[in-house]
Length: 205
Image 1: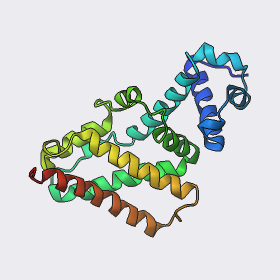
Image 2 (image 1 turned 45 degrees about the vertical axis):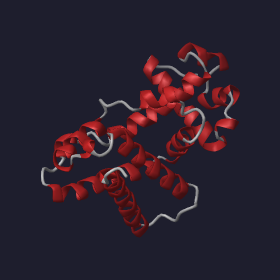
Image 3 (image 1 turned 90 degrees about the vertical axis):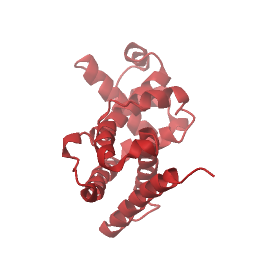
């Protein structure tokens, strides 16, 4: 039986949800399986969460907060334009390695973002411009003038979608992980970002 503070109890329950979805997908998630995994009575879900949907949404936001926290070093953005690519690549590697180091979280996050659960309502809450990644983009904007070409949330969603998709395929065996693969993937993501910005800068026809 779970004991501890309300916050600790909720975290333990959300981590149980992560493990269930990682193993069985959302279609295989049941409150019975979840309660067994969490070590609680099935009815306790509704003491800590409004509904099953609330539990699954909050679990997604827990992982999302962990990912965006990786992009919290806004004071470290270099002022020189030529140094920004290397800085961005190092941030991406930290993000990518987090996903590889937390395979259950990555499976949950990928499956949530590619499912009907990722509704307009969830996306609106997900695009929180107070998060560290947006402050970093604002700092980069001083040199790169990003906002003149694409909204920050478009750039961030591209990074999330591409990186999570790649990490999911590595974790599930679709792509073989190696230092060389990671280097190639970093180039792919950064070139894709540069391509988005180049296309956004083209005059309308």
